[in-house]
Length: 78
Image (tube, rainbow, N blue to C red; front, side, top):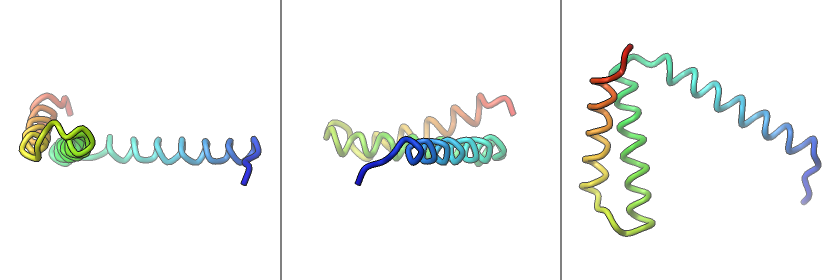
């Protein structure tokens, strides 16, 4: 299966549009929900990284998620 230039442009535009919609949705979240979303994203990022690298544990991922949520809640200017 080969992709022509028009197909790759459509896919790029679709991904770009989805990203900007997601970004707008996240920016409209209230302060607490935004902090929780950042904490969850941080948790999953560190957890997946620890599974791949086998260097950290689940406790580290939880601590990073909680810390990120607290920092974003405390320092978010909204």
